[in-house]
Amino acid sequence: IFFPDKPYPPSRTEFFFPNLRGRHSAFFPSPASPYLFNFASMTPSLGGAWHRLYTSDEDGLSFNRLQNSLLGYSGPTLTVIKEVEGGGIFGAYTHTAWKESKDFYGDSNCFLFTIAPSVSVLRPRGVGNKYMYCNSESRSRGYDGQAHGIGFGGTVDKPRLFISESFDECMAATGDLTFEAGPLLPKRNADGDFGNPNPSKYFDLESLEVWGVGGDEVVAEALGDRHKQRELVAANIRKARKVDKAQFLDDFQSGLIESKAFNHRAQMRGRGDCRIDEDKKNNYVYE
Image 1 (cartoon, helix red, strand yellow):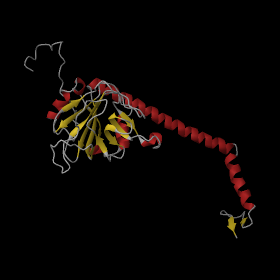
Image 2 (cartoon, helix red, strand yellow):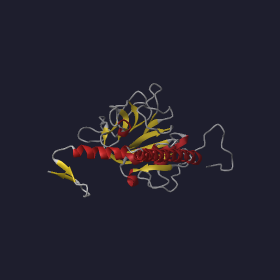
Image 3 (tube, rainbow, N blue to C red):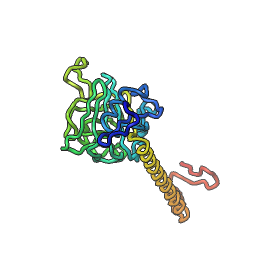
Image 4 (cartoon, rainbow, N blue to C red):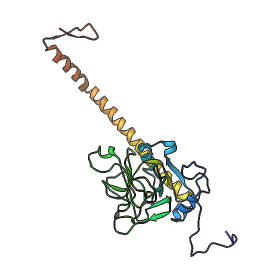
């Protein structure tokens, strides 16, 4: 800033202010929002170009859309949450590609954060490895007995920071074995008096956004990987449909379908309370 003609010192990391590239955000009303400076100060990966993957303002509170925006995206992401009661803003940064799994995954580059009413960064403690989690009910049809949604830290039945698939009973606890201890929600007592030292761990979701971060090259590569993943899924669906159609044609050509129809008619002929009028289209007559 002060010496624009001199090269940046190699011993220091250059600072890049986040660039939303003109995308609307419920959290950053202007491209010079102070929140963006706070984020860029947390890790170099939060500087440079961002790409909005999901926003509840436009995509609605839909877990299918949220999950579809994440799966296959191979770059780092920033999940930003605003809760209703106290207006607290907090979330999680992840550095690993999202996938659907019954287990936690990720690496020690992940961290939790708060932005409002105060700024804090809760980094891994070096003990646990429950960094990030994405498990929908459709994956196991609800039989796994685990939490269904996306989460960070904690356990598979009670993640520390958790957005449920139904967006009800979302949770933000004060501690777990993976990340440093500290409140994510504004402190309040039973009377709703904020600033008191008894935070609830449950919250109602007001806004949710997920951004792909890391700069132009990282974002472009991650979006390309997501596109490839979607093409692979679409190809598998088309293949399955072709297999189903081919099986139907095989059954029809082999006479299996026709045989079932004639067997049914033969069984009906054997019933004393039913006669078949061969000249009528609807030829089952019950007496």
